[in-house]
Length: 269
Image (cartoon, rainbow, N blue to C red; front, side, top):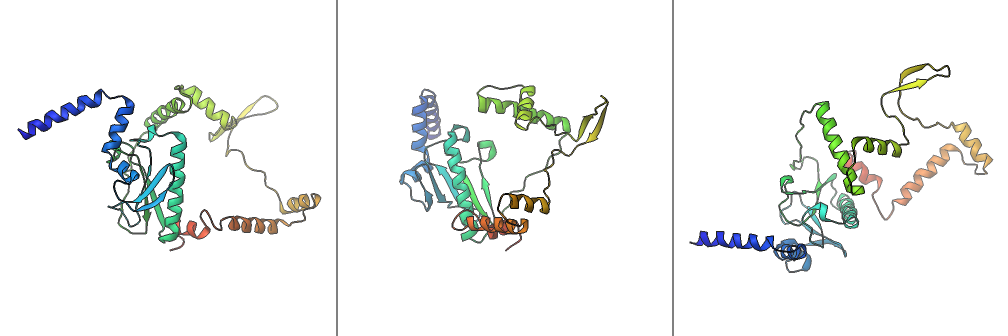
């Protein structure tokens, strides 16, 4: 009898949900969402970071010590629902959290993960970004299987994704030719194939391997001559040394420094 009542309640709830407006449904989801309760303070958490748009808390079942859950304060179930300014803000916060972990926990890397949808492993109905500190041989495994695909299969998938990007940014899907034309326009209409046809003055053509546009190299003599003409008088080697010191000085008090980069790349433990 109890099981029958449970089934009846489930059906009743399903019918109620179907009749809800988008606003009512969102409010209903917020009432059922444990993470909305964490954000409102109804449920206790260990806050790491908070601003007007986002909240970061320690995961109570971490993959590694320091595993952080970063979430928008507004209730969004999946990424497509999130406004562009908010999703950008979230990933800037994720970057800051990653940098803080590299410095404070003496780890060698971080995983920044989004499970977007049930098929992708999403369990909570509140969008979040996992920022997980990593050390060498920590036993956490995120290895992805490598599946064999033909060139034709890859071309077909690439075409489908590229065409639907038009729908995302321009509100209407585009055809393959439009996608390619747009890419070439943004790339300066350069041909990036390995082979290129060269046209001679006499009208004949020849196919040659092409490595793409190459930057013009400036010799040390030309560099120093140019600086003397402009009154700078800075030798090339000294200018490079100054530029490097300026870069390092810019890292003081913010961002990520060279030690952090070396640690992430495995050059420094």
